[in-house]
Image 1 (cartoon, chains in turn orange, brown):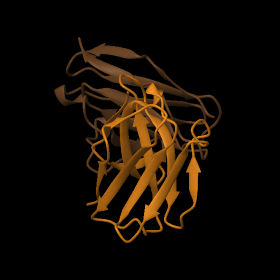
Image 2 (cartoon, helix red, strand yellow; image 1 turned 90 degrees about the horizontal axis):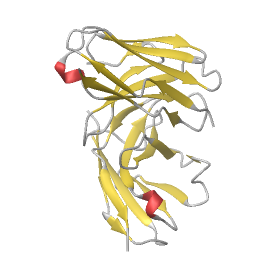
Image 3 (tube, one colour; image 1 turned 90 degrees about the vertical axis):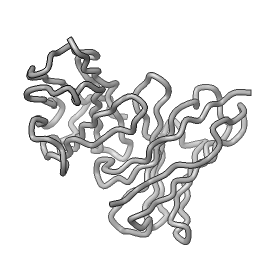
Image 4 (tube, helix red, strand yellow; image 1 turned 45 degrees about the vertical axis):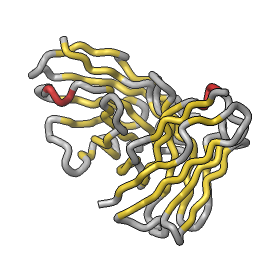
Length: 117
Length: 107
């Protein structure tokens, strides 16, 4: 059974870059069947899809975040990563990584990232 | 973007009740709709995909229906473990969107 685990700083300063990594076990990010995805949830609010990367390296991002987001894949470490540039307080959220095949069938536990000076 | 609108926002119910949550899409998403359950401090859990297919391991008291723009999630005989927030999500377009959530509370 696949497991996903987010890691990265819990506090980021405004205008800096938020960087998170998702480590996958029990499955391969090189699998041709899945979209490796980042989703976030601001406190008390609904879920927001950030973007995904396919095993080929092709990506797709939420248009509202596209100018600030990069998702990348590291097949040697079986990981994928999120970089979100120029963050503000509005980017404070629990960030989830997920494996998607249509719907998001497997999720990490989530990590809270707070943007504050 | 396709907008997803859930109703109600909050629902008060008792154990044993039959509960229905509605999700409307701003344009047709055929049957590319999923339902998730989320408990406080936890990641969402996939319940239903393809509008009506039950995810493996999910109790049969959960069911989904609908197509096009209108969808429902039904919980038959609500159990104590079912008090949670439920989200719909469309994956028809390449920009996935979620509903605002429905919190099912104890009456």
